[in-house]
Image (tube, rainbow, N blue to C red; front, side, top):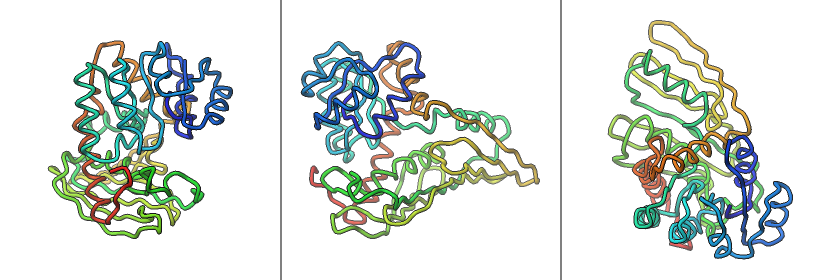
Length: 316
């Protein structure tokens, strides 16, 4: 485990529900937080440096640090012979992610971005239902989330950490758009920036090979989001909070309506982690659910959106 922050805490809770997986070591840039995390989750080894973590006897590293360090840690982990599950967004930009994927291939290691929604029981059931009783090909996706409850000390408010709504919230929306509409063709965006140089509110629309999407993310307004998938014979509402999907309504043009209700357990991180562990056991180097092409597409959409707003990170 690299980075004992909030995402890593949810990861640790979820890991308890994954058979055959153990959190064996942790390292963080803040020694006190690392010690507190280890005590809270019963992690036996506290590492004083990243090098010590990478030299430890573990199969894989979960990278839960801020985006500014994702690429560096992933590449170092591959060189040390470790598989990597990297928290979203997987890097600061497309160029960094391409270097990460090249390193994974060079060292023959598994890389997967930690994008949880597609592994939730609701999302999987929705996929299966629409395959059997389709609304036609999805041609429009709408999704978004704004969260003014985050304190000004939250990492998303800091440019040097790769912050902003697009990078902190936008990856979920980017995933949904690409998962249903295919590769990005072009992106348009508008919004406003904070004094720190990150986006406080971003509205971005994207054209894909199979349709269009309207997405939004922000830090200075408050609104939990649902999501909409629209086809020629019906539409789907994935109810809030759609990125932790538990309920969906499918409405058909002929008047039929179906309610899907699939509660999740252990906070939800357990599903993506169980999939990642299965890939390791099977000797796979890429997830069929979250392939490298999808991660690159998400990163390209996010990079295009923030550059349209003039967001440039310190680490780029």
